[in-house]
Image (cartoon, rainbow, N blue to C red; front, side, top):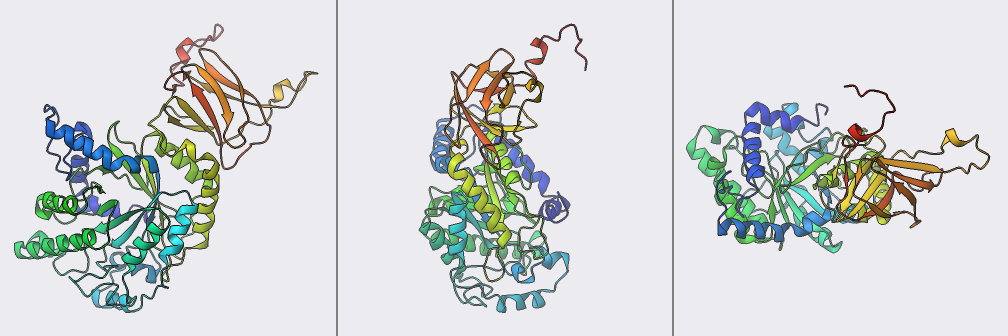
Length: 477
């Protein structure tokens, strides 16, 4: 993780907030039971109550679409896009507020730029979107009545959140709102930590903005809080905040970044599965910046994205991949190229991701795994090619062979997702060997092989090692 990627995480650690967030999330993951409003009332070791069971059932119903979706688009877009040097430019460059406010008058996005975002998300195989309604800079991308520092009364002259919501719905995508609790622009944003009157004003302002977002745009599917500095959950009145959100949007899901466990955890820029039963979503940039950064060309390749998506799905999570539109709302061409490549590949291979289950499979230097029920999907990133050791045989026919050590239970059938071709195989107590495969990889950036098993598939490479005959060679290490 480079410096720009970790800015938000560093800030939380420096402010002493990350530990509290991790503790809250850890408590939630340990119990697997938290209130509908993210209260975390069920404590570890306490006997479940009928209310707990009701809350779990509510969460499962609300999150069913999200667990099926697997892949979403994150959008970071605001005044920082005008600067084009990362979304933390105001803080890292020490820009005074009066100077930064000039950006609001020079923020002139093209009309309905969000249509292109939603259309790209659809082509990329993404099922939901999450847009920054207000980032740390404090600028509101909607027509709020609580401050004139907003898109309607500044340069855009219109409600950018409304355009985004309409665009997402037009493509059949679920709608999510990002909202930063931290606010560098509001006069009470930092003062609220030590001044009770300032805290009261700032908390009322924050709750008021969230109420507008939950009231003015119809059904909203995700509320994605960020950075709860400088207040504690009690000081934010986060229980009350979430209760209001669920009263206005009963089917919404919320994350864990207002200091409460929420419905899902949010590892950032890395993949870290929560324990079984706890929902989680890795958010990650397409290059190294969240907001538009004209000099950041460290684009992830389709190979990396497909592998990340497999790793996330294997762990039972979701993958929220970010784009940073330019000031006029256009999408950097490199982002379009990468996402379209991934989306084209998902047209054939999407069944290996959407609606899949957590998969008990170890690592493999050449492949990755996902699972749906009793079906294992082998994502072969590095195709083996021919088998040179057999070339001297007169009857040799070029073919590729893939071996998966430690697969249990019995395989019943196998086929290539790309072509539908049936794959021959043999299996013993050590490995599954897929034979008769073409020399060249049938698909890029990965070839997926679907293997039906007679029970839940598990891949444990280490388990077979003590059983493997070593022909008088000792086992060391």
